[in-house]
Length: 239
Image (tube, rainbow, N blue to C red; front, side, top):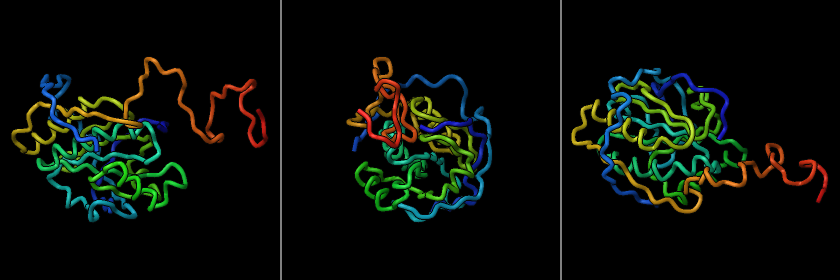
């Protein structure tokens, strides 16, 4: 996950952003801190265009009006994002018929992630069926002033960003916000049940309480925490 600053708001106004199945779990304790109507308006969508779309025709602000939209910034090799994917799939599957549109904005971190064939393969292999906006030139990323993978932006039926969350976790709260924005948009019978996921492989959440090895990159440009005496030696052979 890359992090530099907390994001102020932006949105999708002229936005041409051209499996582990989950089941409902009855955890019906409502989220108490604030209702959807109390969620502040963080901003209104900036004009930004994706270079290509997967799983969908290009979606515009007009197409999304009246829908609750969940924007997810991702890149397919990011392990932090991979661990959020089971929830994204589950939310899309559960609420798509009630007015939720999940849009994955794929903004690459590395050059190989700009290869559209690599992205298509990842979308297929990971069972992603919701719309994916290809943002290889980072136009949408910049419009949102985003610095994180993963990052979620919750947009109401009027096109206002009402909440954002950066990083992993907060899944129950995120789903409660989806439910409340759907109810605010006039969708009945949303209920309070939350999805339950059964992730496998790299989608399993990290056991942070027992983790022995800190996170690092494989490449030495950003790698750190080398175990060899004196740290890493870059550009030369060394045992």
